[in-house]
Image (cartoon, rainbow, N blue to C red; front, side):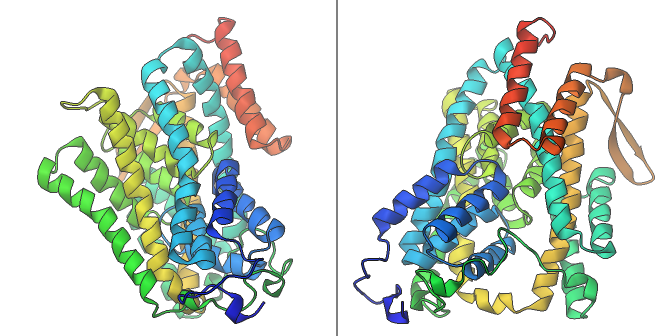
Length: 468
């Protein structure tokens, strides 16, 4: 494989071994349908199929792309799909990979949102969701442990995680401020050459197992990926327009108070500030959508996460569920289900469209970013802070799942929710204990834990133990 065999911006005839867009569509469709269990599972599926099975690219190139995506706001797994699709088949490949990665989850969550809106108050359905919530709490705690093991390499990173948790849980600081401050601390620490900020991030399989030279792309840089190419800039401009035009039209035509305008503005803001992956996004959405906007209750946020964990595609497709309920409950002159559908689709549009923009705009310059110590240190600090944010999310879920009543404490600058211990739900506590045992001790997979707790919730309801 030589440089002339690789895709370029000039018309060429690809060698037989090089996959066309048709084969690429089949591969990305398969990846999308198999991508369950959050970003870690989705990245593992991509690695297994693209690196180990197809050998389209090697370990070093895969991890290089992933590290760049971790620098960006939004879902790193979906952005990695766009990046690799662009790397293999130029702009068309990036758009194809990104759309196929999102499509199965979009369809599944929309259908389940309809079911939830129409029949979510039925006893058996509520019982299934009651069981799912226990598994979701265990899964989020598992994410805290996994990310913490990778990110908290020294006492400075542990301190950043602890301060992040205290900032969001105790002092109710906004998520963007926490991420911005952590990134600034890391950038300055890296620029000063402090050893504590030189921790490397590791994702996926260990580098070196499959060398780039042994793969289809090889070690050469395809011509279309080099800085200065016009196609990526044009694509970035188009996606900036596709993202911004609907938001601007809503503001101009509906004003700033309509539910669709609020959805567009909030989730567009989320797409810019949510560094740290899916669980960090969820922490921000839970903080704002539940606490600030009142679009849904804490238990419903857990229900939405349970839906997203059991469907293919990006975990933050749960935002579509949030947008659906927000518009469904404030439909204006529209039928509620139509309003909810439009709200969910609008949420998905402004959440995922920026992902294409970031890749097409920044990927050609990724080599420059890769060699920057301050930027790598900023990423390490943000990842450490995200551990504290996700821990806050887990505690927030636990309080609202296990206790029927909470009280707010305010004083000395702090503002936090504390449990009323007499309102502890013993059945919820028992299901959470079983989910934690299955996840951490028995090391069962995602689906056995989710399915087992859902079935237990239904059996408890049918047996008369659980009344909803």
